[in-house]
Amino acid sequence: MTKPLDIVFLGLSLSSSWGNGHATTFRGLLRALNDLGHRVTFLERDVSWYAHHRDLRDPDFCDLRYYETVSELRRNHRQELQRADAVVIGSFVPEGRVIIDDLASLCTGQFCFYDIDTPVTLARVADDDCDYLARRQIPYFDVYFSFTGGPTLERLESEFGARRAEALYCSVDPTRHRRTRHAIEWDLGYLGTYSADRQPSLEALLLEPARLLPDRRFVVAGSQYPSDIAWPDNVERIEHLPPSGHAAFYSRQRYTLNLTRASMIAAGWSPSVRLFEAAACGTPIISDRWPGLDDFFPGPAIETAANAADVERILSAKSERARFDMARLAREAVLSRHTAMARAREFVSALTPSVGMRPAVDLDVESAA
Image 1 (cartoon, rainbow, N blue to C red):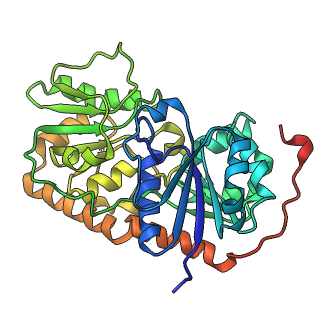
Image 2 (image 1 turned 45 degrees about the horizontal axis):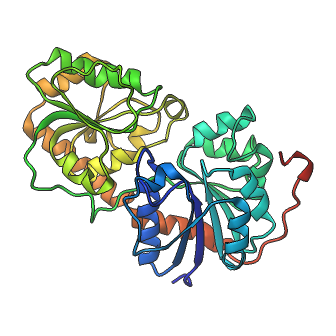
């Protein structure tokens, strides 16, 4: 067995899931690492918009600490960062570029990046428009963990200079995501924060089917949707749904809808946590189409749709037996390969070959702006 590791994460937010999909991923991964016997600390920037919406104030699986400035981060947490076996910086960390430069020469253990937004990150880095990671910083990391797999991993190494790129997909905690006893209330639902590039797909694959099927019931849960969206009368809105309510939400749907950002469709191999959560809850999934989807869900385990007619056909024509069989296959696929415990083991395995002291990083100070 691998010796227990001392791991420090710096991420967008662990304490609040408000408009923040990163929280679910970090919570599952850190809980599983703790269950494996590792010591985990999470350092979070104390910002007002998360402070006012915290739904996990005192986690029992890690040490959650806050900092207000980069100088405070280094001053108050220098020793634990320096002695950690691994320090992992996540995407979208405020002032991430400054933090990376500050910590790259301080950390003596493995120094890693966990990109939960890889296609978005690489597009911004290529345009030098990313405030949490600079292109010149990618080679600093011993391991670049990516939410996106497939050809993107080779691109990270060959084009962006990553020393080692490893897929670390999102995951699900099956003890928290499983079928509940709630009765089905909606024929189709969607869970996701508003995104401009996902909105056309939501319009085509849920709002238009709702107009075509006025006797059916639909639901959209998630925050930050503009006030000028014309919601059909048979579409229920839930403004915010904390992770504790996800299992019941999925269990109340005949089908759930998965929508993917345009950049992630283009990259492929970018499953969302919604896919794994819904499957673990035994809810059949209708998804948009993207390369690599079959690697996660074999054909009979999921339905794909390109337009409202596809959704209407699935809702109207598929038998209950076929729906149950589809949900069973998806659940089996997820529980065998995509649990938080499986992901934690992958993470530790990627660190294990080289855990220990590392050489100092030669920072390009002149281009650090």
